[in-house]
Length: 290
Ligand code: NAP
Image (cartoon, rainbow, N blue to C red; front, side, top):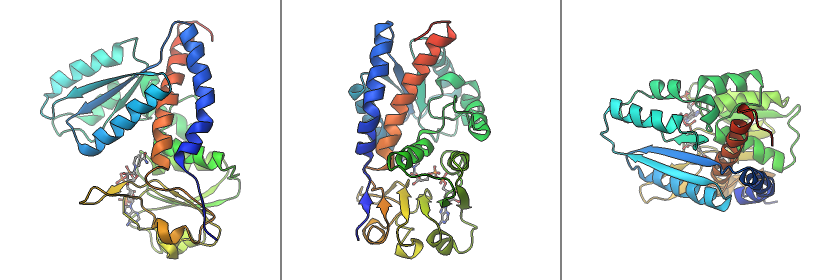
């Protein structure tokens, strides 16, 4: 039987009502949540992501300011502009595109970024919170999007065996922490893992975050598995592929997410939700209440 395909937009629709109510409450208090997008250069994939994020903010009635810098900007000039954005009290959340050009030290930028504006979970403060299971921080939106999709599909993670392919700081590692917080048993796979296909085949849930087009084939997936595809791979023709061979895997799996239109769609909605939360925090920090 063909898998149940969970589209990101269905998950976003379910989030929208709560977000809209919170935005209206903030606006009644005279605040409009505002996200800053910081981009150095103009990579095609960054621009595509930016367009989606800007649209998502518009649809959620959140302000969004794009700060664009030339690829050859000097480190001093960038750090000065970034400090202004970071210190601007009208900006509640900051999203920065990475990687940076080599003259800009990513570590330095992340170190100065205010954790309460770090809506994509880049700073040590927010990563430590994920490791401690403290949900007051901001998780990287992609990792959280996977959890949001599993929640939407009403999947109880307790006791489930999860095969997670990818161990980056942006996706794999934070997601591992979020999954074990929900009592899943997780096997993390990476380039040195042996027998990945059999580890995945024996799992109840397969999460692919490797950045390898169609690496998760039908041989990786057991009957009735849940398959979440985080990967975004673009071929020479500009065609988008996930890490999962959707056509063949969807014939076996119970639940699957598509690419495009799956995890990525939920990721941008979470970015907007984090801006709302950052705006709420900023009021509470000044002793206000909502
Ligand atoms: P990354 O930093 O390149 O990490 C990739 C991870 O996958 C590494 O841990 C790597 O192992 C592992 N890996 C790579 N090839 C593998 C293979 N053949 N077998 C097993 N493991 C393999 O990438 P990332 O930033 O985590 O992103 C992962 C994917 O998600 C990419 O396609 C990216 O575009 C996508 N992404 C999507 C969103 C979204 O919103 N949907 C957001 C961010 C990223 P090693 O550690 O051993 O090298």
